[in-house]
Structure formats: structure tokens, C-alpha cells
Length: 435
Ligand code: NDP
Image (cartoon, rainbow, N blue to C red; front, side, top):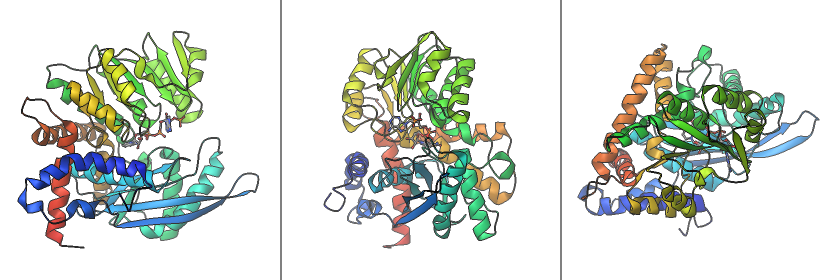
């Protein structure tokens, strides 16, 4: 806390892990007295750099770029890039720290990292985004590589940005390698990668519900966000027979009591991905829906909630509202969307709750599969990748049960994910010595 006191999101993420991992270390001799957690909270490397670029009117802008190389004990650093005005060292350190545990849970050989910039792609032309991405990669390229650090997308970084970043990396380094994931299908991308985080989150929910002899079919579902994760979580819920009634963005949420069906979801995908519009435009086309400006969707009655927008978007009051309305299962698609108080309330009420580091790990897992395909210079079919994704989500679920099941049979998925993620990284760190 003395060293990182000015970084609230990072402290929050570390505290959540420490609460469950410290008692585990205390009861497992091999980890005692080795300061493993102390080493894990210090990034192996934190890179911060200037990104200067020119807008369409010729004005020069300066943004701050980052790459946090958190832990490479079990593989090359791996984790997304976020472009959003709120980006700072605290937010990226919390994301990088979470990523270490998440990547460990996937069972694939990937260390943890995260990066990005306070650049805001909203309202920028394609050319401006391209110039920014090129300027960003001009510096980032010297710190990454297919065996060193393999970034991917996150908030504000989708297929368009990955394309521009990859183009500049290739130009500078004169090599065509799998240095980024989330690439286009014709130039090294993996099938199912765009869908993977959202699909994986819903697969994880299916595994959780199965422990209660239940499933997604017929359930009313509330989703926040309308970006990559939210869109594909909604698509999978529909495929499994659930009814999605909300989606949101930073302007507020829409509530469609008739349900957001396949056609309406296609409208949202076009609105957000191609037109880069705002979610309130939905109600101009669909009169069954209402728009709630500046609000979060957690007051809407539902059986299952998928927070898929951003950190700390679901607090204690929201948690109480959800449970009062009969919600039985909360599965995080975003990273750390629930505050610590909200999580404690879910645990106290013993409802099903999954932390993002377990339930949204399908995205990075499929990125890992993209890396494998790039190294082998092959391309798996959609069905092959989807099957592997399902298998990985089920394995992560099993690990959570193994380490998170309590005496009364309730599974604390936070505890399970933290300890299962910790053990693999800690064992590798012990084997590699004090470095
Ligand atoms: P996108 O940029 O595609 O979408 C983000 C969504 O969240 C948008 O609807 C956006 O609204 C909303 N949002 C962002 N910031 C805020 C905010 N401060 N307040 C309210 N709404 C906000 O990002 P992704 O879907 O990729 O990421 C969503 C979450 O999932 C993040 O937490 C990310 O770290 C996590 N995640 C993503 C993975 C991936 O594969 N993409 C993998 C694992 C986790 P608006 O359009 O108004 O900005």
C-alpha cells in the first residue's frame, strides 16, 4: 500500500486476491516465507512512452502510451491494449495483475501483461485512428515480439486498431509473425476470436448453472455494455434460448421488454461496429424499448446478469437490487465490474457469482489458440476452435470448484480462481529462483 497507495484500482484487485491467497499460502509450507505475492504485485517491467500524432486538421496531439509486463513465469507476456481516456498506470496495473491469474487458469503457456493509452478513439476519423496506432507502434514494437510479449485488443481496440498496429509492426520489423492476436481472418487471425470472450462467459455460466441442475434456456438476462464482449455474450444467450432485455454504453442503457432478438442484435452490432453510434439510437427504431440516460441496467428484473462494460460498474446497491429482483447468477464478462462490497454481498447470499478472471478467460484462451495456429502456420475450423473454447471454459470451471468449494457445498469462484491461478505461477516462480 505504501508503494501503490495512489493506485486505487490496482489496490482493489490485489486486495481481492490477497484475501484468498494469503490464507492458502499460510497453510501450504512450500509457499511460506518466499515473498511470492510481494514479487507478483511488482511488474517485471513498466514502460511508459510519448505518442505524438497529427489530426486531420494538422493539429499535433500528445498521448501517453503504456505496456506493463507483469509476469513471465509461465510464458511470454500476453494481454490486451486499451484505448480510453480513463487509462492510467493504476488501471493497467490492475488489469495486468488480473491477467496473470487469468492466463494461468487457461492452462496455456502465457504470462500476463496489459497496455494501452489515454487516447480516445470516439469521434476520430479512420485516418486519425490509423495515424495514432502507427505512432503507438513506432515505440511499442521494440518491447514486444511473438516470443516476448503478444498484445491483443480490449476497450477501444478492435479489429480496425489491431490491423493498423500489425501493419506498422510488420513494416518496422520486416517480419510476418503472430505478434498480436485478434488479427483479421485472411492475415493470421483465428476463427471464433471475436466471439470468444462473450461466448466463453456464457459457456462458463452454463457450467455454473449445471451445478444447480439449471441452464440459460428460458432465463431473462440483463447485459451491460454493447461492445465486443457484450455483443457476443448476447448472441450466445440467444442461441441457448435465453431472453436478453438490456444493453448499455457510457450514455445509459436500453430496456427492451420484448427481448433483443437476432435482428435487433444485428442492428446493435451495425450501430456500434460500423456506424460507431450510441446505444440510445436503438429506441428510434424499436418502440418496444426505453432508454435510461446515465443509468446502469441492474434494476431491471432478471435471472442472470452479465456485466460486460467496464470496471466498478456494479456496486453494493446494484447487487442488492439484483438479488431483490430474484437474480440467481452473476457472471462477469468485463474485468472487475463488481466492487468488493458487491462481491461480498453475492457471497453472503450464496448466489452463483463468477469473477472475470475465470469467466472472461475465453478471449485470451482463444488468443492463445491463435498463437498456436500462427506458430504451426495452420488454421483450425470454427467448430474446432469452439470445441476447444468450450473445453477450456469447462476446465477453468473445474479448477474453481477444486479450490473454491466450501464446507457447506457453496462454490466461492473468486477463491477458486485466485488459488488455482496462483499455484501454477507460484510453482514456476519457485522453480526459476529469485529473479
Ligand atoms: P469495447 O470497447 O468493445 O466495448 C466496451 C463497452 O463498455 C462499450 O459499450 C462502452 O461504451 C462501455 N464502456 C466502456 N467504458 C465505460 C465506462 N467508463 N462507463 C460505461 N460504459 C463504458 O470493449 P470490450 O467489449 O472488448 O471490453 C469490455 C470489458 O471486457 C472490459 O472490461 C475488458 O477489459 C473486458 N474484456 C475484454 C476482452 C476481449 O476479448 N475484448 C477479454 C476479456 C475481458 P461506449 O461505447 O460508450 O464507450
